[in-house]
Image 1: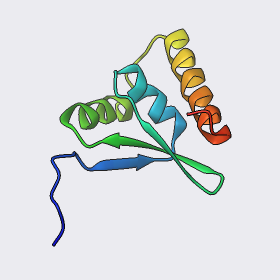
Image 2: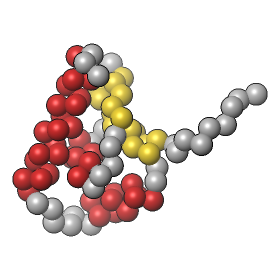
Image 3: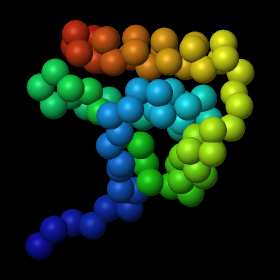
Length: 85
């Protein structure tokens, strides 16, 4: 018999650009590696689906904020890969 938890299901994303956009919207991913491939795990919440919809609608975002979010995610990914996190 399995235990039921109240955790939200997670959605794995391989797209670093979409993940950076979601990160800008305040959604913090967990990073998981499968070999050398990194995936960003986001909780399946209403905010997640709304932000994904905004990304797919190609809404304008501040360029420097997006680049900063992208750099932060990549840095977290590299730290995780090196075993620092």
